[in-house]
Length: 51
View 1 (cartoon, rainbow, N blue to C red):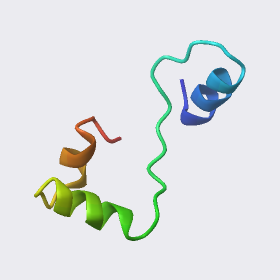
View 2 (cartoon, rainbow, N blue to C red):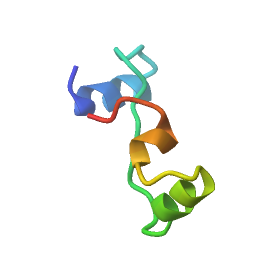
View 3 (cartoon, rainbow, N blue to C red):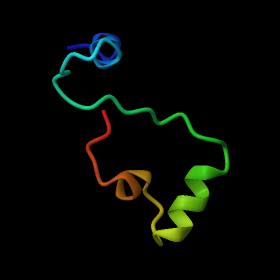
View 4 (cartoon, helix red, strand yellow):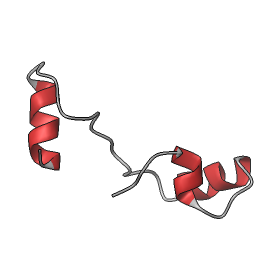
């Protein structure tokens, strides 16, 4: 399932193959989160596989 198909499935109340995720954040949010979690790696903040 493509990202687009995943989002449309969720919007149409159908089950996608995995939860759609959006990493579009304010420009300061990633830095704030990395400081909070004491890491320099954004993947550690999400603790998920970023594709």
